Image (cartoon, rainbow, N blue to C red; front, top):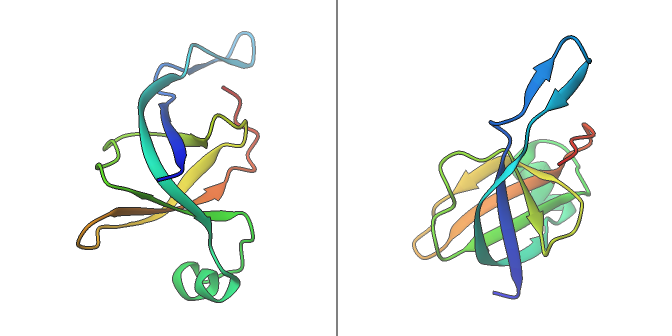
Length: 105
């Protein structure tokens, strides 16, 4: 486990139609040690049905939170959203993709 993954919830953010902006805070739910690797191109097509070079595999010993909106890897600014989740025998495995929607914290 060579990385720290921070899970965030944006449930406190609401759209204000008067200002046309999202207001409120995102909140960190939990930080977990994790092993993070890139998803290979062959595996990306098999699992996700498409080629997404910005996907990562995140493996943790502890169960990730039930509700979260995005995660950050080692405090970097790139937001990752859940694409699929697996529970093999020993580790929790998440496949996440880079959020290109412009989400800001």
